[in-house]
Image (cartoon, rainbow, N blue to C red):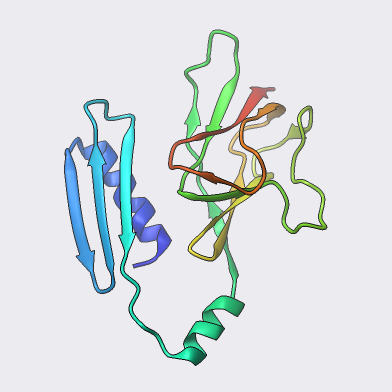
Length: 161
């Protein structure tokens, strides 16, 4: 089971209205609980890692891949002042830069277009590029670099153009 399968499962459970789902597949146990508010989804993902041979462990630490861009939830609830909140589509570590010596993808005041990379989120040693699904100007960056983020956590506030 990879991160995309887990993301799809979380989205499916959130939309279905089910209170709790438990799933055990090979070396992974996942429990997804939804509260009384179906918009707020709690996740408890526990991984039971089995012992792996040393050559595989070294290979998995060295091989880091960049996945295809992940679709991001857009919260249009801030419509009274016209701002749109971009939320995290996955659990992981938020990075504003592609590498420590590289410039940040976006800064406050930058204009972004549909498809521009806003940040990357590392999840299970995979770096997921988070692209903008709207055009506009970055008003706020709500998360510090190298901070953990939760599913559906607000990341950016954008003034659409």
